[in-house]
Picture 1 (cartoon, rainbow, N blue to C red):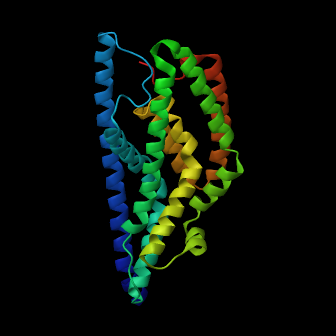
Picture 2: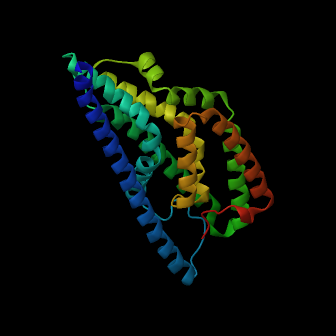
Picture 3: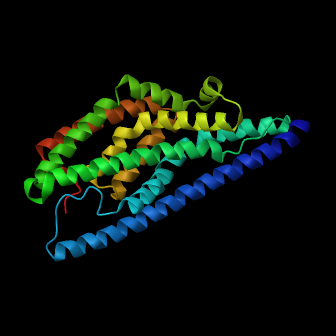
Length: 268
């Protein structure tokens, strides 16, 4: 009876945090879908007046792009990161019950989001540079599709790399991560969140770079990447998913190189 009473507040807090993460993910998807629909209407108008070219950033200025990037990260990554965030919250709740200093969970989540924010900023700058380098007249849709196909093949190969395997193993085991990298205090929480973000980035950075040539607001591609990330990190057969995804990406990329029409690209 005592154990049940003591566990009840912990379970209630866990459910509350899970509900908050779920709401944030749903809100993120809502913003992304709304923005994608807005971009589609803008593309239709541009085609109607003869505009076109390579548009990896979807014509967004840096502030809007980065805001949308954060919404994308919340939508796509929070479901897969929920077990790690819940593990941190559970450990802090137990420490509070023992009378120790309680560290709010947002201090763990904030550096995680910051890692992806910086990655989005780097990707945005690289995309702008590629747009300037390519120019409207030098690159055909077929050529862009073949380059994107090469990126897909590279993503498949990266799935098999030692770095991917190590980073994924850290993300798949919240308890092992907490035992290995635990740091006390607020600075410790920030350090752990940063480390978790870097491991997560190590798992997924190539998959997210694919969104640039395919289309940052391509909702179907985003759903596919989010589903793959979640399956690799959270499902029991995550290791098999990793290997299957590697084979699928390599095959699809090779097909796209040979038949560019099978791969959508950010060419308007």
